[in-house]
Image: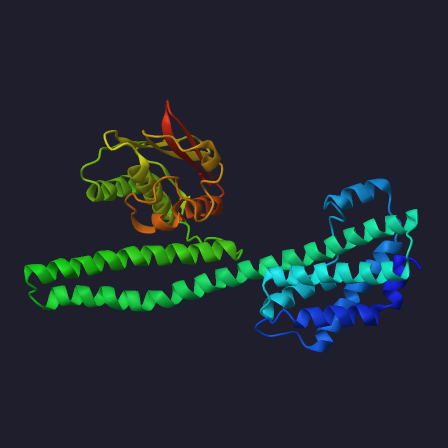
Length: 374
């Protein structure tokens, strides 16, 4: 009996064995027996049909390397299984264990019936393993997407719910300063409350932006006519106040205007300057340069100091990424989460622009933002 025929003729025994194994994993809450049997039935039908389908040597070669059909049917049984396993409280290793158990039980039952395997049987066995791997990959991809969605949703809810009490704390501190005459010690404490609240608010804002970007809605923009020159001057002045002991050189064209989101671009410039202050050499100036041509405006932020390692530079704009070797150094605002450059990239991308970084021992580190002037 071929392996395909064996699977179709012994589905009840296979499903029973898989169901017993799945129930032993003790998830937070399990699938109903009907749901479980229904999806195993569909997965087994797929495997049996795949074993009987014609397959060229090239197709087999591609499939063995995970390069099978590039346009699989939506919502396959394996994909639905991965989604429901996530919802029912299984972890990904438990779900992978199910497929390992399925593979082992089918091979055990089949080889017990077929004591000697022909060349065709061996070919069927290879294709069977490929089919199991394909179903497993579909389940894992869907499971992982559900995990990411859950994390991002949690970030969004957390960030949204924290904003209200933060606003209350900040307003209370401001009100106390205005309506009373605090002594010097209490004034220091009130100023510290305001400063800490502003920092947490910045972190919450970044978490919300991260959640929006990861959930696919992107960073929202409110475009309008604005002067990028004025924005650069304003952000540089703010940074000088925060870092009075550092030198910042501004080299900006006097009147660069465009249809951009001023608040969001201010966020980008603040992130880049803050990054340069944190990681640049203390005795060297940080330079912000604004240039313009007929179609684009370009902002560069440069600092001297140790270069960013090449391996880190390749992923510098990913979320939760910070420069290596800085865990014990000063951390300002949202940079302790490693979200500043990620969010800057998302804002620039939303404007249809580009952001990049170069870094070496000779020139230091330069971040470049290019924006279309449309």
